[in-house]
Length: 142
Image (spheres, rainbow, N blue to C red):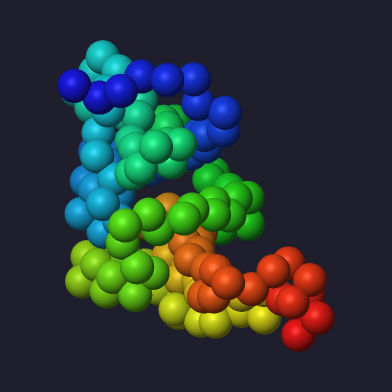
């Protein structure tokens, strides 16, 4: 049974095909389904609650037929990879025929990131620290 807790932040995304999107998030990025709302007229759920790690929750909602989606222009979700490296996330996303995968790339602010675009064009970024021994001042000084 999934743990239920107050979620300080979560993202709601409208998607073209909720069943296909939920399957992609699970296959490509390691999310799991926590809850699916009752099926709508299409027989598909109207909402799917996905979770990867604690506090890494996404709610997918079925967009109305013909609705224009915001896609990558609207949201960048930044997650810690948890027990998985950003390289492993990049490899998994590429193996799942993701729309686009960028990185991993090392950033001057002491993180390694990979950016993955979902089937609807939403951009998800996973970051991991490079050197945990550095202080904030040391990183900013570089």
